[in-house]
Length: 231
View (cartoon, rainbow, N blue to C red):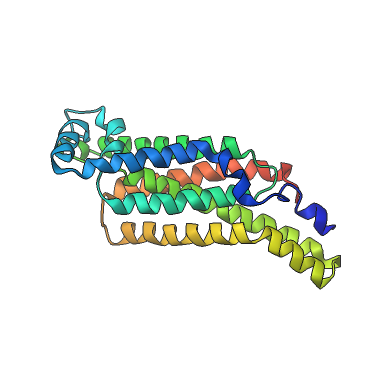
């Protein structure tokens, strides 16, 4: 395997391709703005009008815009950057499409989890709101993409057995860093997600369903693309 071909599509600096992820940057900007919901009077209004309750079914959708802690936004940033780096590490992936997929799946996964909560019988009797469902879905999305990228590069690395050590080192230096960082960030976010589930720091139904949606959606979206990637 020619190491020069192995890195095809990644000859430019990775930071020159961040513009392909406009959808994710807008998504993060929205949730940064959403942190204004921490203002007590505004938060009280948001909870009163947008939370999931038996008399407020639209809250299944609207509640994901209600501020419930800065920690969720921080972890969302970690997951988003993991996803971006993971997409940069996979040759042949349409980064703009992947960016839109991340945003749409994060939102829809959270809404679906909210709906499951509502149907569970607990929803009508309790008021639930917050962005944690979006964050948990994004963690699942990022983790599976980063894991996929790691496996793809491992296969490529094995195919370099005919190359010299200098050629292997040059190829690894050009191709591995983004994927390594992506997986590290995703692993950190996943540990936080499991901590939230294990120690019941929030709504386990919404958190568990959201995380599962992210993992499943990312697997369905990226695995079929492997046969089209230059491995």
